[in-house]
Image (cartoon, rainbow, N blue to C red; front, top):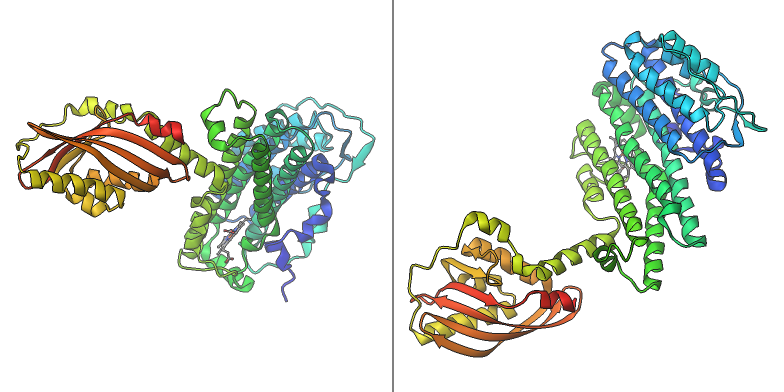
Length: 516
Ligand code: HEM
């Protein structure tokens, strides 16, 4: 009979007795962070004690994780806290002494980071940490004695998780279990930071000064987690599979905290949207006018960074899982690995993504007069048509009428086919032309994407010696529902087969940008 609880692989339940939730955010941060350090040093000790061969990569990765955990602990806004741990001794941190002296560089960084932290909050391991430094021939660091009235127990994970009593399936189980529990510790911290931001959103005016710090902690925490799960890349697959089968497809997908993190971030973003809506402003306006929106722009950027770190986690998780069980596998909730890709491809804060797209389209028109001029300089002038402009009135009428009909009915195939093989479109005159059917199709796709409705009508037609000049007007609706009116003059050259050799548009595209 195996004694290891299922929850230790996936959920957080066993560890939750340590935590205070967001009722005392800093205390929670401190305990969560040290539970995580304890778990990591326990795992490292366990690997070193079994004298596992070729363990250097695993050990270096675990140590790098411990170093990052201390950096994250230092990023918490502790300032001479009134609460801290009682004097203590950690059996797990003592495992650092099992390392050989080639690791003294990383021991130096970890322990220096420890003392940086212990200047702000009492950890209670100062003497032990200095002895570890001494063991690695590193100078002892000055200890700042913080006398605090409110002392809490240093977390004893061995006792709480009954780690001494667990029986494992095989050598990789511990690694799998600890990686999940460390993730849960930091999910917990990230959730509390998000709840703090939520509180600030609820109770005071939104400002970067108040929330920037918390967003940064969440961002850094998720970056760390993305790296932490890659520890599992070191597992020997043959030793992992028995556990996987015993867990019967159970995965971090059942982590309630992972979902909570996602849920809170969405709620938080909705609150932000409501806030800017009540100020009668939208994200495009914030992005467009950074100086006028010096308070709101950093918040939009925080959400963007947060999204990046979440997606980075999901991306690394995707690569990890497909490396371990192959992309055709699926897990306990029936999602196959390939579908996990949606999580890092689809926008999380959709309104920011939409606003960036809106701004891109808007600026395409706003700066349409210079479209492609940099590359045009390099390419040189567009080659002149070798064929002469036709004198056949029927051919001219068919081509020109077909051209405006096809645009108005969004018929890409018909429109492209009206051009000769090397026919081109210069819109507006002076910009980089779209030459040949392939490029013309790209131009047309842009039109279809931008307008939800478009009606172009010919106002007048002027037959000239080597071209036909059309004065047109257009009534349209943009993709975001704005009514738009614009007009222009277009000069066509058409060959004897009735194909358009060139279409050059004289107009000011920024007229469209102004109406958006
Ligand atoms: C051997 C390593 C791992 C494998 C093979 C694996 C596999 C999977 C699979 C198949 C899913 C899809 C959901 C399902 O059907 O169960 C999933 C989801 C998930 N896993 Fe893992 N996982 C691994 C490690 C981890 C670790 C260490 C974490 C850290 C907490 C984690 C967190 C998650 C999360 C949060 C989801 C939900 C993703 C979503 O909603 O799109 N996984 N995992």
